[in-house]
Length: 102
Image (cartoon, rainbow, N blue to C red; front, side, top):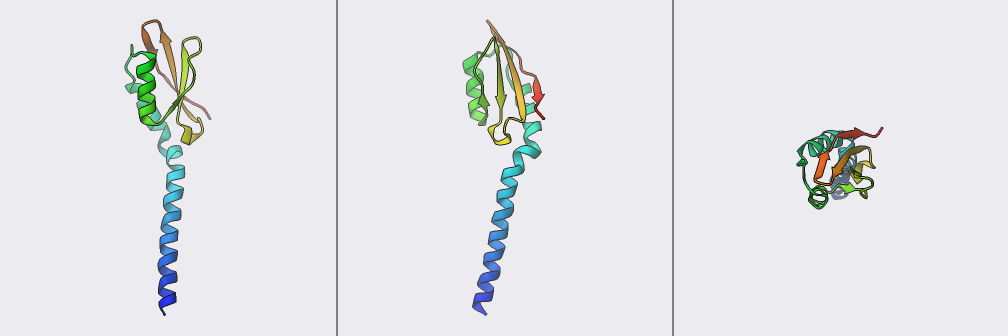
């Protein structure tokens, strides 16, 4: 009788952990687009490269190297599916449009 109760509790806990793990894995694919779109729109125009890099790091995103005044921000958990394209000039950030990478 006690082994049966232990087995039921173990299976319940294991099932909940499995569901939580799957939810954590698929979270970026379900809500990643809206989170990245919001991040792109909240970047301050005129911010320096270092300020933008600090904002990117604070959100847990990654930014590519700046090449010809352009860089890309992506969420590594979604494997680069959702991007923010950063355009810089000599004064700072010019624009940061969202780009979907199917």
